[in-house]
Amino acid sequence: MGVLKKFEQRLEGLVNGTFAKVFKSEVQPVEIAGALQRECDNNATIWNRDRTVVPNDFIVELSTPDFERLSPYSGQLGDELAGMVRDYAKQQRYTFMGPIKVNLEKADDLDTGLYRVRSRTLASSASQAAPGGAPGAPGAPGGAPPAGRPGGYGYPSAGPAGAPPMPAAPPPPGGGYGYPQPAAAQRPPAGPASGGRTRYWIEINGTRHQISRATLVMGRSTEADVRIDDPGVSRRHCEIRTGTPSTIQDLGSTNGIVVDGQHTTRATLRDGSRIVVGSTTVIYRQAEG
Image (cartoon, rainbow, N blue to C red; front, side):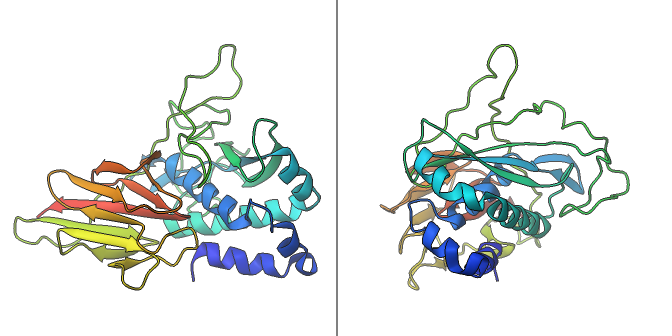
């Protein structure tokens, strides 16, 4: 069972069903959870071969109406979201520099149903963690954020489904919140060689799907080449075309696609490109061999 599905099931029993009533608004908890996953993916920094550090301190900005509706439950919701991030990090073998915190804040410039996620890497006093947040990884580096990564919260270039893309910009003068350009974690291609041909595949939640034809359609329909069980994914959401270079094309989906942090309808793919459809992250892979 996926991390987001487990998160939804845990929310169902909270406060005697109160959450089911609260979240009939535009903003759904699974949307926020998916945005936190993307925030980790887009801001992952590789320290060494066995250690990829992701943010651990998150702020979810909501419109005034959504914030007023959700603020009475912010403590429980923040705990559940933090637990979801911890589960996702364990699945992806990410590492934290300190405890995971998720807080809600009001943003006057947002309309109802839209939200933003800000994050930073905040070191604890121990400043050492193992994959999934467990302390005590041998040989772990010290507590400062990775070189080149500002300590303040940053805005990623891609927002949630339905929200306009957030542009990257330099930090404002005099300090304050930073606006870093997302840095996606890269993993080396794996798998046996296949005799000099270029091999193509995608990875979804740790599962590899080979691309054996010139095109591959992803979507929620059972007729799609790769079916993605995600309410934010259209029946025929997008299509990957392999070649030199490989490309991805949106097929008129409801929520669009995000490729390497940018909302787009068509993009060139490289090995390691991260494609977000709905709340699902798809990693595109290719290798000679």
